[in-house]
Image (cartoon, rainbow, N blue to C red; front, side, top):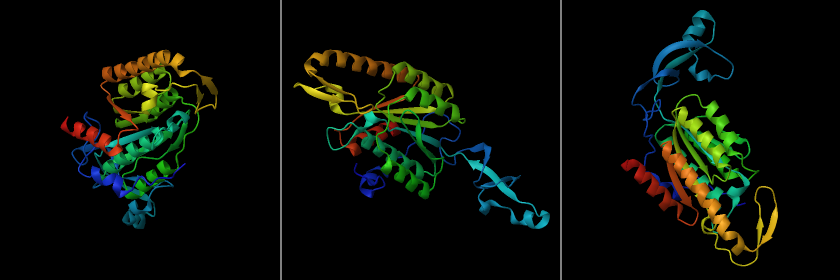
Length: 295
């Protein structure tokens, strides 16, 4: 698999004029706009707390250490920066490719651009990759160093096991305590009832959710005509079949799945964004961001 650099200036430069801002009131949806009730490590001093192993020593209060011979950390009023969780599906089906980019490649570009924009705003971003379980999870950070770490994870990510989106998303919704922007990038090839329950879980916790559904055009149109060997990307099962006999039923089930997902997103006020790997990425992403800013 080709290792791409997702911090390439050629990729990111067209997006410099955009900002990625949440619509709804999450705790700190625009950087620096409001004071947070939570304590963090930011600008205005709030209080001390005792040092615990793992704390950054640059926040130690050396005056207190000199007077009391005890280690205390300075706590500050936390800036109300946006917290964004980018959830990227790296299951086997995301490796499907009939053109230049696989669905996973396209998903990686989506995550890289959003991470870049959020970091430019000093907003905190967490990248989580998953298939049937969480594969890689980076914590919320807003530094350039963190942006490079995300780039490394994206560059190394490869299609993995079968999908179990419902269970994974449920667990992530449980872990995500404070309201945030949650971006899910996937083909959503999994049980639609499980997906719906998981999206309901996120919505119930008042997160703002954006769904990027990535497809290869041939998955949508099923243009195959000759006797074709179909190989599962998730369990290596091989079927030799006449696609003309399968097409009607395939398209029926595919379209039903799509309608159910769109209906769920509409009912929960989730931003649903279809993406297709044959459309130039910069064009598709710029169109979405421009529309978001207008709203």
